[in-house]
Image 1 (spheres, rainbow, N blue to C red):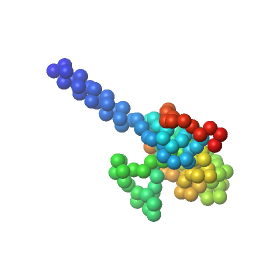
Image 2: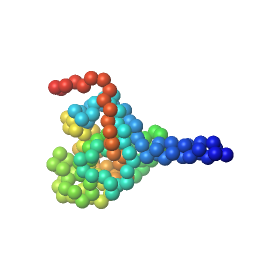
Image 3: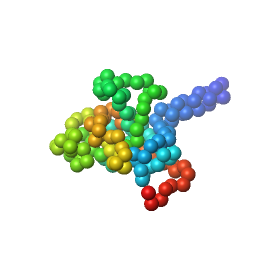
Image 4: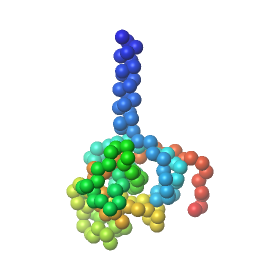
Length: 152
């Protein structure tokens, strides 16, 4: 009986951690020099009220050719992107996206995300505002795999 309870408690703990934790391998160069391809990001799912501008976040990428409202992939088939949270609802629209989004404040329920490598990033400059509910989590820690290209 005690063994069964311990096993159940352990399974519950694993499920809890799994539902709150993200482990993502970085692909691409949009977050260089902060993150490089092959780095591993450990993240945590958070509520919107805990988000802060400047954090590295994991966001859902929109399905090409569809708007956000019609987009509803199953959890396992979502395409994720790692970006920096540039602005939250009510904050000024960052200069880097004013050409697309205009001036003023970010509207309620939306965020602006940008890659650190602006020359090679698909982000709010191309996609526009990201719905706040599409922010999946925030980075807690990153692990570097292999040598870095220093000076590039």
